[in-house]
Amino acid sequence: MLDGRIPDAVASLEDARDRFRSTSSGAHSGLAAVGGALPVLGRSIDVMSALADAGQRTAQAGVKIATTIAGMPEGIEGLMSPEGAIAVDGVETLGGTLTGAEAEIAAAADIVRSSPSALLPGPVADARGMALDRLEDLEEFIGVSGDLAAALPMLAGAARPQRYLFFAEDPAELRGTGGIWGAYAIVRADGGRFSFSRFRPTQTLRNLEPGTVRPPTPGYLTNYGRYGAPGYWLNANMTPDLPSAARVALASWEAIGREPLDGVVTADPFALRDLLTVTGRVRVGRPPMSLTRENVVPLLSNRAFARFPDPAERKAVLGDAARSVLDRFLAIRGRIVPKLQALSRAVSEGHLKFYASDTSVGAALERAGVDGSFAADGGDLMSVIVNSGAGGKVDYYSRRELRHDVTLLPGGSAVSATSVTIENHAPTSGQPKYVIGPHRGKAGDNIPLVDVFCGPRCILVRAERDGERISVRTGSELGYRFHRDYFTIPSGRARTLTVTTQSRDTWDGDAEGGSYVLTVVGQTTIRPTVATVVIRAPEGTRFTSWSEGITVASDRATWSGVMSDRMTFDVSFERQPLLRRLWDAVSGGEG
Image (tube, rainbow, N blue to C red):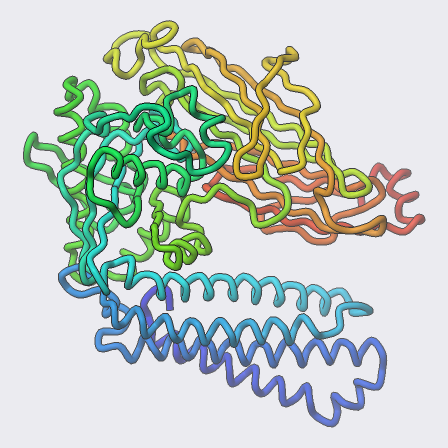
């Protein structure tokens, strides 16, 4: 279905529904009833019956979605007009179907959830757990899709034109939401069609005196006021929470005498890279440039500074280049599936974010995770956010590596150690001063303001820089604690900050077992951030389930890879019998 092969999807889902229906009939047959009299076999048959009933409901929900799309005049391509406008009627129709499908899948999950969960053979228990995980994920996905379909018509100006403040972010100079807001434009949405004004340097917007703009949250002024926020436009998004930064931007916009706007959109060069996978090469005439998926990030984040030394000219040129890509993307006829896939990548990886002032639309964007909110859905949190203090574009040359070790302790508490290593590969010459400085320190210096975030109940145990104990500033934002350090990394050097904290009520459960959920919030960097997350189960317990991508050895769960915008790690553990613990002690914990 997601590939656009709707007839194949309908046929496949109908076949699945019929097979599940046949299995369900067998599970309720007389022979199964006889087997049901036997304790273990009977519970297994009950689970089999629940899975068949749930599968039938889920497949039927899929049939309804695929049939709705097939019934549109041009199928899934009909969700966008040939001229690039969103087909509001089609989106609204699909939204109603998605709402019904969410209810069907929720009922399917309830059926599996109410089936026996204990005294089951291993394969049956595994099948039940896998089915429940998939159904819960699917329910969330369909629900979010329905919310977006309901919000999209208003977002696209179906009822009345909408106007949004669009910021081009540049991660070559880091800010909390990703990169500095270097240029801005106004996006107009009217009847499903989007259009862009010319881009202008953000520095052309008048900065405001302290106290002119009301801080969006209680901690915002305390955390960022010393850097000029909220009145200083270039530091308004030092916070990692885009809704907070967006409210500051909209209030500042009105404070300088402009007409009220309906929201904020931000995009970085990686978002344009995703759009270029659909458009192919885009040529810009004045001056002549050619943008491709391969060159757009280095061109916009680094090479343009030497090519266009005048800041006003450079930002105008790069703004026009970005607008050319956006206009070309919207103007391409058809290809709705590749367009949706490109937008989905840009949004899911945090390169394209939306904030709407309307509360109902904003709630849908928040649930979908496209508004750049800094939050965890319950459980623990870890995030490392850097704001550049060097005054140049040296973050283009940085490499970042994270390691987060969590040891779960009895009673629900935990001890965590978060280490961030930043390598500075910036040159000290051969680049414009605008890029490598010196603005502060020496040419090529990287001067990061590092905030290490943890859960709402974490308490600092110690902080170390390059192995030596240091003092750090402790604060909070949106209910989450952070510990801040500010230091210099000369060109060709690397430095490591390690923050150790202790938290209470971090995991749920008791002495026999429990579960732990960790949300890791990332930050866009030019070079992908590599991370390792290690979770150690409470003493005497072993992991019984864990999120995809985690590897488990005894009481140690590990994930390693390239960080994305937001990751959730969910593990469960149980106390092992005494004989098993004795065997582990003798055998070294293997087997």
